[in-house]
Length: 411
Ligand SMILES: Cc1cc2nc3c(=O)[nH]c(=O)nc-3n(C[C@H](O)[C@H](O)[C@H](O)COP(=O)(O)O)c2cc1C
Image 1: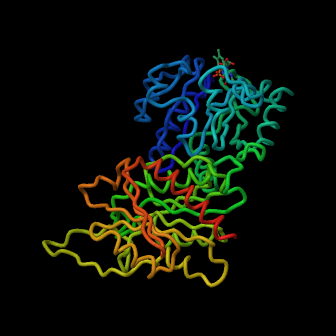
Image 2: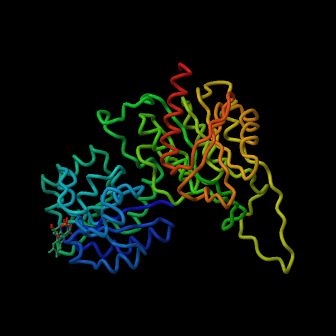
Image 3: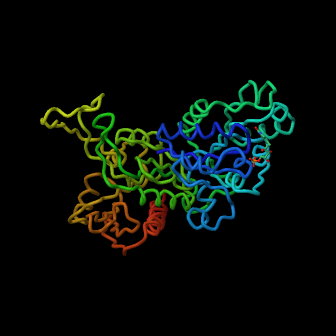
């Protein structure tokens, strides 16, 4: 599910942002709102909370908010930050890196693209200061929608009317189609052992449609794969994370590719190649229905439908057995409910990969969807048993093991 952090500024057009929340939600996009102090003169936090179904944030120094979700986390939660209405004041703050309230601090701290929907009096819009600020923000990679020309609340006519909610929705949808993560400035890129190495990680489940409303899925949360992607990025890797549908925010410092089905996942992985390392942590559905229904399948008076299943592509084996440009290190995950090590050994040989991270996902372990994991590293040389650890710690150790193996491979 895509996530938008909507910053509502203090302009008359703020009332349209309430409709914008509804329109985004209708399209399955989760929305969290931040109101500036001035915005609260135009719309109430209660209206924004009711429409978004989420807590509204308006105070940088709220102890409760910081305990629940700090301002930095909030700035990273979204796939895209939208400022609507973007006041002259917010544009000026964002262009100059000011951070003296929650909204401006989020705009400075976010690692995602920002889409501004300006709204202001035409003199304010045409003022050289605003022109300079818009030019600066554009050069910094910010996106803009509008403003439109028309009659304004102040009675004047000209450019400055905020785009209509559906125009903003279209701009949001277009922005979400391309990567929204902002690259780290070169000087701050981590210079760890994976610097200059390209890494592709898959995570989460896949959803295989049965008809337009039903799908085959599994209980994978994606937590381990996301944590591993972030840990590999922290070691300097240029990481692409191809994720099935999850409820997790984008992993920090990685390029996200969100997909639904196994076939889309394979296509996204192939598109991200060549890579030095491939880690297949996703719980890819083994099968999909042979023919997906174009319409919702109806009950048939007591007769139950039966579905023929076909096998999905084997993403791990496809990459591990590449003739050309095979990644130097291919790592698979084996989620088993019995004889974990034996199955992992067999998988290692069958798929042609270099390392299998095996874990027991029987319901009583609580591993699938949980925060802890007990893994075994299976290589052609033997098995390493790791203790029960937090998934982020498993990720940190795995990333270190991957970096060491890559260095050892001398490639
Ligand atoms: C009735 C009224 C309407 C306003 N409309 C706008 C507007 O459309 N655009 C704008 O940039 N500022 C507008 N302002 C001025 C902003 O509210 C003011 O610059 C405020 O400091 C903006 O704060 P913010 O950017 O933190 O939301 C308006 C002010 C008033 C009193």
